[in-house]
Image (cartoon, rainbow, N blue to C red; front, side, top):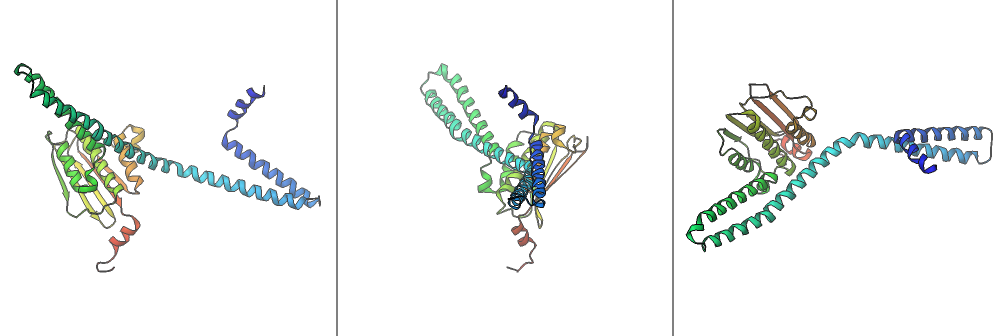
Length: 297
């Protein structure tokens, strides 16, 4: 009987109700202690002090719990983006190291076999070698998209230029990447966020916009790094809440810019193209150096 009542009691009493019940019991106990103290009962002062301490601990715990709950969504979003980047890095490494090596070995074996086959089997073997070469190239491209290794070595500008050149190579899109200032020594999380936002914008443009021209502009401003992506495609109607509207790409951009404390602006209308502007603020120390007068150490 008690085993059946326990799940029912557990379901009926939520955590919030349990906290309120504990708080009410503490207040009742405190009231009883005050009454006992006023009537000069033995040990009344000690009971009063113990109840006051218990009530203070309960109130402090409830205040911290509410504060943790308020901070949980932002922390969850930051953690989710971090997990996504780690998973992309892991998949990229497995594609490049494991599957890439297996395909390379198969390619070498097929080339060795091709040199020893009779003439009537040369054509199928050549087709097999070509298929392996194309598959290996695709695997390397996907690995580079998942984790752009050149960001650390070449920097953001060169990585974006290589990505645009590779992605738009066989498309009618005419593109331009403008960067008038040097982008050396950018924070890693800022460079990754700018690369991912551009990557998502270009992918959306190819899938939906049917654009003919694309402009990507990077500027190093005193307040932060500015990124502008503009195309002359079909455009769309940006939603106030992209996540609820099913615009997952725009929702991902907003999450990345929010994680760094920046701002994102999307200007678009059906038939009038799309303009995306993002500002990634500098860290406090970098912002102080950027705003300092020249010649001041």
